[in-house]
Image (cartoon, rainbow, N blue to C red; front, side):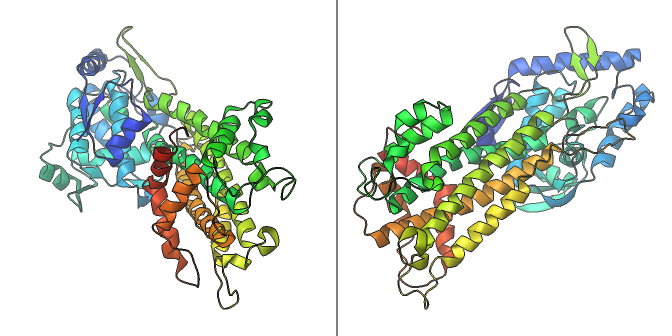
Length: 509
């Protein structure tokens, strides 16, 4: 099993996925331990000297003007957690919870939060021993960070709440006991250090982003198969067209499609069959490319956030200061995840239009709904209905969460990001897009068979063969949801991407 060393500075999307999905273990770097100890000493000094610092010697939010004594600090931190754990909805997936814990460890490891080393080690032990708190998906405003869901993460650490361990959902204290992890008592600043940040929205959105980076590759494969199913006009992919409008995603997409289609006997030149294709084929580089550029922008923002301090107040050991600021505000992630959702939704929008052209005999010249003996057979008629439903749902989900705000904490916290809602929406959009692409790929393979497969491109042939190994050509009606599930499975497990990349080695998605 792989191990991820936490420094606070170099966590990547790939390392996050290793911990979240592959259960890689985690270890704190020695230099991070030194920084944690230094920042903790500053907090202890603040408390011992009675210095007024928000959240350390004061209450929270509207109560920031209430002074807290040293004797009251432990009760304050416990009360913070138990009163803020008011989430709603279904529990977040285990992979998301693991991401939350990892991101919080990385945040604390930077040495600007004042948490005790023992507290951080407890979180590391929970990851390594697979104690996963039950965290409701709803209830965060995205500023002051993800207070409610992060509080649910902390509950088992103090012997409360619920956690999953060994396949069972247990009382938090029991889960920790069975895993051999001691519960802890929070002291000054620690409760705030654990819940004031953007780790929930970042975990949800980062995992959706990771899947999105694969989906743009699948979208190109799907489009290339549809291109062959329609004898698409290659001229629109000529590099000269894209060199005069040199957006990186657009140019890259045109190159990728040409490589996927290299050697195909099922494409055409301008004027051979038609002068030009419909936009859903001709404009694939422009549409897919714009989504790629947007998704890559989001990746840059997310990896900055993953290695940032989103606590409040921030402890600066070098100047012996505790400064109250607004790094917990989720706006950078809220805008990014709204953008991610919109970029993904467009991949499904154009995919569904290509699918419609495949099943519509007036547009394709193929048998209606891609099946012989139509009437007794419905073929792929309702596949397009389902795709259209998912696309329409995405249009609703793509409405930006970040344009909304509502005051909280007696108007002390009067502008919030709704970033966690944006992240959750982008994840839902991603799952819908994946399903639509699976449907398009399945229909494109059927259309190619009905045309009489004359020879596919070097990349599309491998994609076609991967599908046909699981899903045979439809000759008469059968339960199609099973076929769609199989097509979607090769997207989820990345088989279709790996197969294409291995054979068409020159393709750099």
